Length: 178
Image (tube, rainbow, N blue to C red; front, side, top):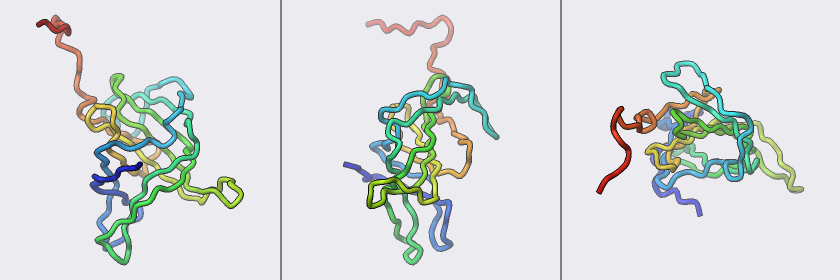
C-alpha cells in the first residue's frame, strides 16, 4: 500500500499563476524508486561531471529491473489553487542512475516516459516525460525526497550527511572499548 501521509510539497514545471509552484515532495516513509527493484549496473561507475558542480560525484548507469513502473505526480488544480491533484503516472523507465559521493549512495535519477497500455495490453507512449531525483536526506537508506527537475544531465546536490568525513582523525582507533 502506498502511504503518502506526509507530503510536503510538489511539482512546478508547468505552474499556473494562481498556484504556488513546487518541485519537491517529501514522503517520511521513503519513495519507491521506479525501475530499481531487480535492476543491475549497466556500465562501470565513473566520475560524473555537470555544470556548477561543487564536489566530486560518482555515477552508475543502471539497467531497470522493471522497465514499466509508475511515478507520483502532483499538480495544481487551475480553477482551485488551494488544491493539488495527486496520481501515479505509468512510465517507461528510460534511464536510471545511482549517484554517490565518497562511496556514499545519496541519490537516484530517473528519466521516465509517460504512457499506458492500450486495450490489447501494448505500451503506448504519450509524449511527456519526467526527470526526477530521489534523495536519501538523512543517510539511512530511505529516499524520502523526490525532486522534479528540468536539468539534464542531472545535477544532483550532495546532502550534508554525505559530505561529512566518517573516517576518524589520524591516530584514532575505530574500535570501541567497554
